[in-house]
Image 1: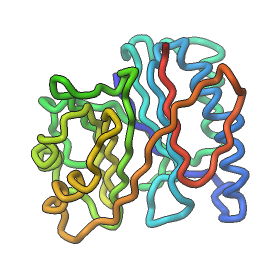
Image 2: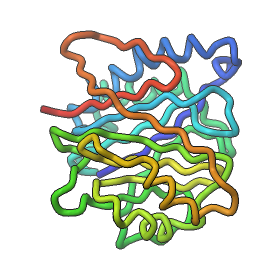
Image 3: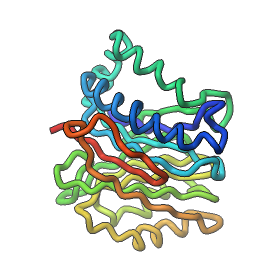
Image 4: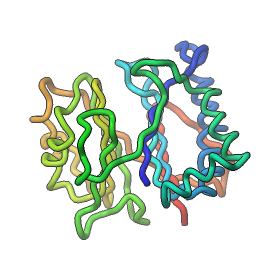
Length: 233
């Protein structure tokens, strides 16, 4: 089961002056706790990325999470530590009504694509290319803002020559696209392939996830643009 998380700061953390507080809490508490707690419930890959504060409605922190199964994930809802972890989201993230409500969604496979927006979509790796859980995986995230892709089928068609496993999410004002590669991803080719899907040219920001582990540290220094990749051994 693949989940995509989108998070916005809660009040009063949403004030621009409190951006450092938000980053400190992500690095010292929330990100380590996610990996420490949820690996008990099937979490196999976790890649959180910090975007930018208060920019065009974009989430301020997004994450790709891969679980062994939905059943394993749901077990945390019956466990005291898992329940406490879920409740801790509200300490730093906001959940108001509207487009900036922190939320997560389960990805559907390409053959099940029905929703135009708001549903993450998963495409498996083409034979011989990298998977998201591969030991050699280099995970890259493209954030396309100021415009949105027209539909999920169009994204799949445009990226059919990009072999690595991918997950993407189309929202009204932005698109998130994670791609697994062996480190040789041609970003320019991806951008050219996507150009025709937009009414106006999007702004594209790229983030390459850094391999991370809790074995050597209990926390992380998180700054604008930080992107991490945790993987079960």
